[in-house]
Image: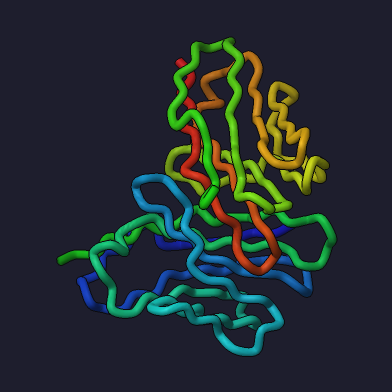
Length: 117
Length: 113
């Protein structure tokens, strides 16, 4: 079984500052993928960044980077130079890459990020 | 189309009524997923298709929930005899390959009264 834990229900950050959203996970799989999604008030889930468990380098996508610490089973999202449009719910998720056909994502409970002007 | 399209966007059903929620995935996407998201929670997996084959339906909460994808493209999630606890946003997602992330639709917000 897989489990994602996001311990920050809500965060307030000043515009232009960097912010780190925490995510820890638990899995017995050796090969897995970690995802971050953004969900604005409109409801759509927007894919932000992906990290494979065997990727040697931390993933980066523009202002988003993933601080992957495999031994600690953590996959924190870092947003640099935050903008007002970053205000949204953020979900960490994972899926197994080990079992053929087992493609479902397991999500955490999310962190509501509010950027203050 | 350019994205995953879900309809209706909002649905109000009386308790006991049957509902059908539609998902039109991105053209060519093999995998299609349904998730249920209760208010203030993360999405919970319901079921998964690869083309027309339903490979995993372990997340369907009861036999009142049924999903199909007969031609490997459009999918329908049907809920029979709706109950208040079925009120949630139902999200559909499709994907082309495992590492690319899944593309989600905007969801259908179901309210059972």
